[in-house]
Image 1: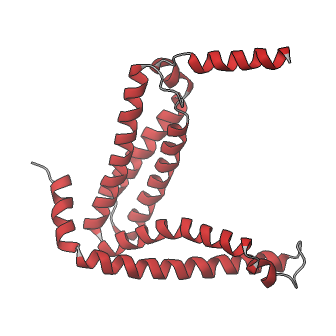
Image 2: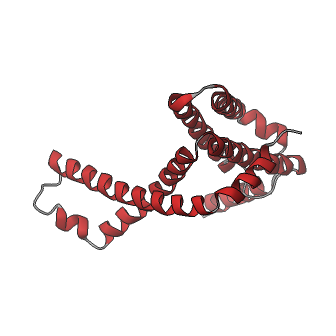
Image 3: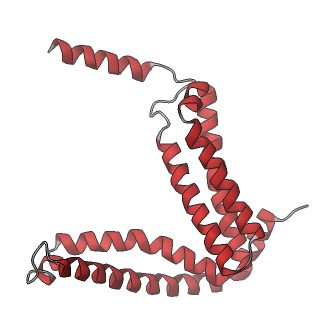
Length: 200
């Protein structure tokens, strides 16, 4: 009991301790450096590499940036730290979402079809995951695989095929809906995006 109380007191004291910006950066120096590198590579390749290959490479760098950005964001203390740390968190979040938004706006002007495709893929992943969870909970997946042993390679093959079918169906549906919405609002969106990224 005494040990538990001591551990609880230590934990409470740590939570009350104000974390300084320099201490936060010192402990995450490599992560912050990697984040900056991926941001620069994503924007550089997006602006200077042409063609589908260039867009693909840029998207991979952007994906890496998003993962690092979310990882760094998750390390901020739940309780607000020092004022400078709180300001740093706010600026980092705004800059991170700004870079992501800029990348997508640039993609819009390079190719609206590619913009729609990327948006559709990003939306299809969580929806597919949600649908697979629902299918598993209501027992449909078990019924489909009941004739296949749990460790049989065929089970994994069928499972992969099911995921591909669900993902493909969701992707086609979302792409059709997104295309319809964007084509109707294309002119107004062009005006808004041009105002956001135009140079004086």
